[in-house]
Length: 260
Figure 1 (cartoon, rainbow, N blue to C red):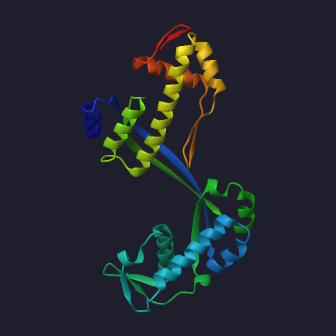
Figure 2 (tube, rainbow, N blue to C red; figure 1 turned 90 degrees about the vertical axis):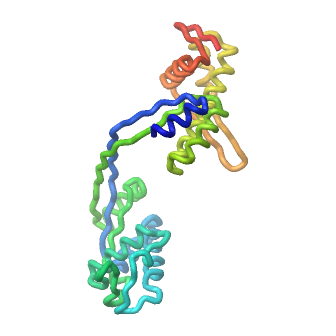
Figure 3 (cartoon, rainbow, N blue to C red; figure 1 turned 45 degrees about the horizontal axis):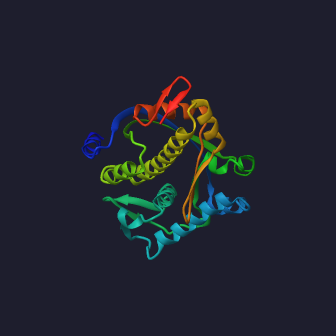
């Protein structure tokens, strides 16, 4: 975090570091039972059917060319669908079909998928449209996970598009792909909002008139050949954004008067 902040500062990009302790709560619906029975009950429930299909594919991949009595290293068993494979391996170990020996897994007996007891876990929002039916058909359980973690941020204080793009390029060596994508969209949206506000400030000299004009334009839209970004805001957020632009030297606001 501190190294990235220094790199940005050397490039003339205003930024500040921020730390916070944050918590996150995730709720999961858990469905457990024999694969064959779950498959039969899941008819007409696309989310559950898709998960069961992934399990079938992973099952066939894991057991391909694996005979009873042979051992495999864990690295041989995991691929693109790691979570699904972990679920299956856990199910086979619980069912007595696999055992660990010297850090390797030995296949004791080839299981029949339909008879294998598996556990499916879905974020509750994935099933929110079918919760009543899922509850009736599967009698599922629920798992809630609470995570407390320290998070570190470098907040870029710029709203000019060129500076935002430069900051993103520098951050590539320090941030995860996920955080970079989020920062990219935030940067584009904030820069676009700032451009529109500054254009309106040339026309409107009263803050309330500027905000009214801006609200009439919501959402602001950025369109490319393949995607569209819609930018939404409310009056209180716009008021705070004007204060931010003033702190950065782009605007001057005094009472209801505004100058670009």
